[in-house]
Structure formats: C-alpha cells, structure tokens
Length: 583
Image (cartoon, rainbow, N blue to C red; front, side, top):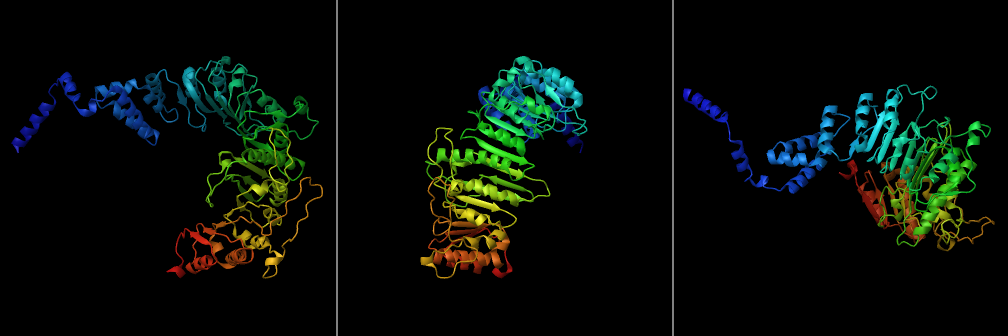
C-alpha cells in the first residue's frame, strides 16, 4: 500500500513540473490535424459551426475549436465571420455581445431575432451605438424606448439593409395609446444599402429620401381610423414614388372613411388614371373591403405579380365585385402569358367556414402525374370575412360567377387572345379541392364548365353524397337508365355574350381521372355507395372511366378495395390502422 501511494505521489510531482512550452508546441505541430493550413482551418471552423442546429451548440462548438491549441486559437480569432454568428442580444449578456462585436470588427452584424417582448431601453441604446455596422435590425419597443430610438435612428447607417420595428404598447388600448411616426431625416438621409422596411404599430414619414431605394415594404396594424394610416389613394401615390419596390405588404394599415363628408377624405386625391406598378412582384392587402377595393381599382398590376387579398367586413355587392374583378384580371393575364407552356396546370382550393371563405392556387397535394404547376411559383389568395353573425354562402355565388365569366380583358399588357372561348378561368382548372361545410346549389353548374379538370382532391363526405349525383349527365344515345334527378340537360348562355358559346361536353368533367378522400367515412355507407355508383356510370354509361381513387388517413376494407378495382380504377390507400374485418 505505501508503494502505491508513493507511486501516485511521484506521478503528481511529474505532472506539476515546469514544461518546455516551446518544445511541446513544436511536437504538436507534427500531428496531422495541426498541420492544416489556416485557410483550410477557417473553412472547417465555419462548416462545423453552420452544421449546428441551434445557437447554444454553435457557441460551444466555436469555443471548443478556439481552445484546442495555440495555432487553432490564432486561426479561430482571425476568422471574423465565425464570431459574428455568436452574437445573441436576446439571451446573452451585453459583455458577451460586446466581445463578439470586437472580434468580428468590422463585419456587418445582425441584431434581434424577435420583436416580443420589447427590449429594455439601455440595451437598445447600446445596440444602436453600433448602427454603422448593423446590417439587419429587428426590434420590439415600448413607450419608454421611443426617445432613444428616435434619436439613434437620425444617425447614418452605412451597412443597414433591413429594419423591422414593432411597437408593443404596455396597455393595448386603441383609444389612449400613442402613435409614433419616425422623422423625415431618417438615418440622416445616409443609408445607401437600405432595401427592406417592416413597421408594425408605427409609421414613418414616407417623404424621407432613404426610402426611395426600398425593394420591400411591410406596414401592419395601424388603426384604420387614425390620421397616421394612409388612405388607399395615399398608398397608391406612395408606392408610385418607390421605383424599385417589388414586395408590398399592407395589413390593417389603410385608412377607411365611413362617409365622404369626413375631413380626412379631402386630403386624399384620386389619381387621374390607373397607376401601373411595373416592378411589383408580390402584393398582400388586408383590411376593410372598401379600402382594399379602392386600392385595387386604381392600380394595374403586372401579370407576374403574386397577389394575396384579405377583406374584412365583407358583404356581397359592388365592393366585393370590384375585388373579384381585379383578382381575376391578374390571374387571367398570368394564365394568358403562360398558356403556351406545355402541361399548364391550374390548381384551385376553395375553403369556407362560418362567416369566411377562402380561395387559393396553392397546390397542397399532388394527385395527378404532372410536373409542377407554372403557377406554383406565384401565390394567388383571396379571403372574405363577414361579421360573425353572417354566413359564407352568400359569397360563393359571386366567386363562382367571377371564375366562370367570359374573358373580355382590356389590352393592358399588350397581350392577345382570350383565356377561354366562353367559360373563363374555370375551363383552365386542372385540380380542385373543395372544403365546404355543405353542398351549395351553384357548385354543380360551375363544375360542368371545368372541361380540363383532372382531379378532385380531398372531396368531403357531404359533397360526395350530394355533388357526384349532380355530375351524372347521361347522353340520350348512351342512356341505359333514366338520368338522376336534379340534372340540368341544357345550358342557355346569355344573349349578351359576344363570344360564341362552346357547348358543354356530353359528359361533365371529361378529363377527370382521379378522386381523393381524407375522411374515413368515405369508405363505407352512403358516401361510398354514391362513389361506387358514380364510378360505374363513368365506366359503363359515359365511356369516360376514372383511373384512380385515393384514400388518405382512411382504413379501407379489402372487399371494398376489390370492388373498386373491379370497376377498373387503381386504389391507393395508406391504411392508417386496421379494421377488424381485415384480420
């Protein structure tokens, strides 16, 4: 036992002896990992840091690299872009961030990753002390921070590209809360790299010269009845003065006047003609339907512009028709511009709930073997929200009418040729997803015009029971049985139509080949029986058989699958679970 103790004591003495640091460093440099050149080390450090999923592990990784040896620490400290990633003004101390700012000097920095809760006044003052280096700045501020923020934003910002400011009132009351507007001499008129601006709950003097270079502008949550909120005409005048603007996002920030006698209206000059927004690639409008309709009425959007519109306090009438007309006009011109493209696809989603209805060209599911839609790079969304006591049903008929109206378009973009001979946009729809609480009487006539429809996606059980029978139009020379009740055999176009009407095909939806469901109730009972009857009719009487039926998140009995296959359709089912009958 004493020998063991003596041995340990000897080892301890050996470890505590002075070491020749220079000799040890020379020996270490002979190791393969320490013979890497500084450029390769810099690349490996950056690669390793970027592979980390969160800030905590990235910080630990970089610190570990810098502590391996003298050479690695020298290489790490020389890699300024490594330390600029470690700044975290939300969770780390100011002392830490100040050291990271020193190590990354003079690289541009990004400050702020969220806007809530508002940051403290001393932190904001310290952050904006480095304004000349800030490239991206996101800040949620409260009332106590306003004076500091306003003063700091009067200084030059040579590197700033993106600024996001959100006012967070401590007591959210629209009647007593202050409204803040940033000054005309923003950044002392010196921000050569400034391109994107987002304001929430506050506004800026849009006459500031630094705003002329903006490519993206977002303004949210201004009181529509407050004097700071620009009117629709003022927004149009503003946007027309921003020559490089490509993205415009306006949410609840358009002044809406309840009557023409209000004094504010007289300061909003109506443009003498429609304003053409040549460069705009994306437009989002959200607000009162009257304000939105006025804005869209007096602008001409490019055919390549993505459009998202959400209207509150909506009701059928002239304002709704104006919004629909502008929305359909942009969508029609987009299709006209791309109609020569091979395999043009036009997906459409129609969704309604309570007092709201929603339309989108988003292709959420790929149920037919086609390449990606040319419209997939563009987003077209339209929403109407009425009072809670109202219903979505009055909105559906005007929407379907707008999509099936003949295309008589003005030659605004030197385009030629109509979208369709007489059926408008509906004749270009290739996949349709209808999510309605009930089957509306206007759906069947609308679908009979969808001559290019290939897929009905996620068909609800209610529509399967009530809509599919209305789509069984049996030609007299092929009839094996009387047509179903409620089927309209003829169509009389209005006499005012200029274009000669193209008659409906003998079989509704002649190109339809796929129907998909995502409700387990579709695999049994009346919905399943209606589907089977429709498939048999398409195959035997209409000579237009379907090729696929898809069941998502459904459990299909084996005998039902065999029954469907006997009709000649391919059955696809993910079978999430097992019915006891299949055991």
